[in-house]
Image (cartoon, rainbow, N blue to C red):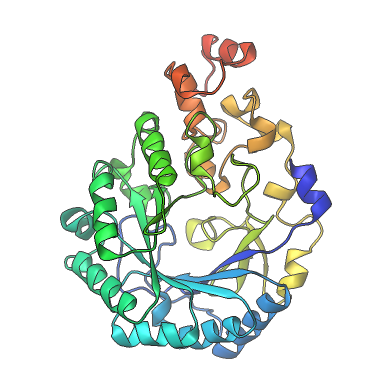
Length: 382
């Protein structure tokens, strides 16, 4: 499958742009370790130049994020700059200080949607973020809808809220949210210190089919989207993937192939979720917009090697013998790297867990003999 991307070309279709790392909350699951402004954050003029470069590269969609992006003084100016150059722009806020004035600024800038994080009902959400946060999100949804903007909700699933999803969907329908993105808490960033909240991998066997059912039942009132680190093959797979793609199954990590991220200090990564300096990691940094243009960074030979340079021999654990290994390419790069054992592969893969627990009823086909042999041999990645 990677050969197809290589022939067609690596197109920078979507970008996550961290405008600032400054944040007014200290959430227990923050992958970015947000809070304090980076020492070297881009100036307003540098940001405007980056916005123009994104448009020149024909990036189709930019999501402004943080930290808390509305703490950047020019967030709506940058959004408007992009929108005027035919780029779709969304924004994700924690809603802590969101007001009608923010909503009106977002509408004037031309944002196509505003996203808010809602991680359960009041007790669960506030425990993860801050007391009073839940009500502030509800108020933010209301004022944003009143100015005519679509509202997207992001939910991180953890042990405290995983059994609330059906009721949460009803709440979001009542609130008039337009879309709902679901993701699973990963033990990286701040969540690495709160592993007691992370779901055990075997819970995927009931959770992934439920999410897939939500996606299947999506309608004009509420579109449900599964994040790219959820699932992988088996019977739920087709419903987890976007309905507008021609092949309704996982095609491997998109980092550096069609998506990329820009940190507030100017560093460019294949995906904004990938670790960098604050996590003690530098291997995912492809360059900095102060030293090179975005186009130069994107087109650099041997760049984004972790996806563009994939070889089947790089696969670890069960992924080495999985029938989908060359297609899946080991799953989400961010998720795989967060699991502690680099030799284990992706143990939060639905297909792997179904194999491990003998739930062949959840698979489309019987396991291959080579796959079964590795389980029976008691391989170390089990």
